[in-house]
Figure 1 (tube, rainbow, N blue to C red):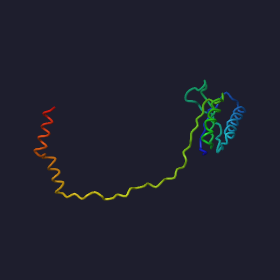
Figure 2: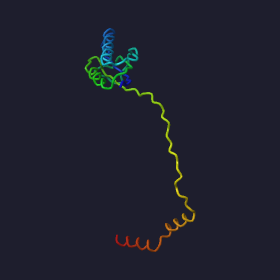
Figure 3: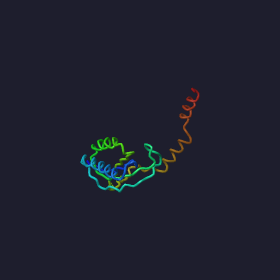
Figure 4: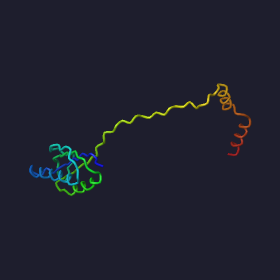
Length: 145
């Protein structure tokens, strides 16, 4: 099953313009060889890095939207890791547009028994004023401790 991904690459600033273009083409070819589909390629942009990566403070950022089989993704990652001029890459799986499923509500069935107020009063009385038998069993427990 094909999944949608966004591949962001940080390319070494030490490459000149023709080398960068050639490098971008190599990445595209790698995707196509793995039967992937390139949806969009954003133009290269130079970015300042928050911290040095491989002794570089700047990089050229490439963003490619693509579709690829999940099984082929490992092969692509391995190939990208072997490229010297690639400082870092991020591969993010995009969420599919999910259709909102209708929320199921449980139908409430009134199976509860109707309780008379008198029964409730009796229960409260039993809780507040326990019978003598209950008192003696509680006293025995206290004495045994």
